[in-house]
Image (cartoon, rainbow, N blue to C red):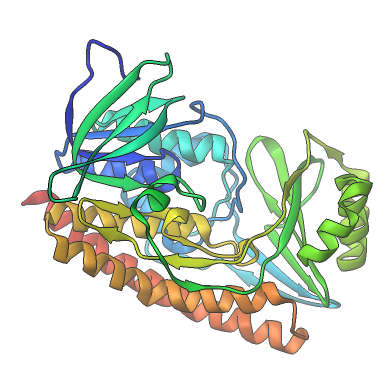
Length: 392
């Protein structure tokens, strides 16, 4: 936590947002010896809307960074089987050991975000929670040169920075301030309602797809399962006055009666978490003195559950570019990001349309699997590149 005694007036990097993308970027930059300040508006350890699931590439990164042990120690259950249900047909996929990874994980954000933020602090990054950025600073040439913010005690602060990184979500204030334009936009969106249940006996994670809806169950922390339903936004808006409980129950019964029965026998813990849905986008993600990462840079529909893995991958790409220290490397960061982001966005947009039959959705999942294999190859090679940069 920043105090009057340890506050610095200039940092090599100021990161707005300290969740997955922001905290991971801060950690990597601080490990490279950079002076980093991360400003997060929410309280440390608070929850947020999340798809939960980590894909193999993200697990590989957490393991390489020394974070995975923290996730496991926090009681996050290993997922060694994923089953896709296409109405009556079920296709189970065992998680094969590769690259030292023999399981997937779906941690609560109260676990994952804290683990990354703690690792960033341990690496030397200054972290401040409950603080709000109120504006950007510019030098005489118009280059972004820092931020104004109000800390958790209500004190106005001004810090200069070599680069300001927006990791502040899809509605990024940093993106708005620098005028980052959307380079590509999706047309479809999935509305989602999820909650947590105890007493569900799951053999790995389960994903069910029906003509006009989807559902799933994912093991997570504290012996709970995250259970979700996805639907067209029109249905969400039309039925919302009847309450999320009713809409959730109706949708899960239509999509997966077996899961609906299991949920009815289990105990819900806590509230429902609703998301009205929004189309995906890819934004311009760098400029003079600024960059974007995570949902601020690229947001995709949650039904493909790739957001957290995207954030970790892009954080490592951006960290390498910032460490290299040139605008040209930031341009390369964006082009490398887009090599994955465009394909993932287009595929996620088609899944979110619900304009498919069972054969088509299976084809889309095969395409997604191939993209994720390509992503693993990239993450594997990129790790060596960043490690070399950290040793220089």
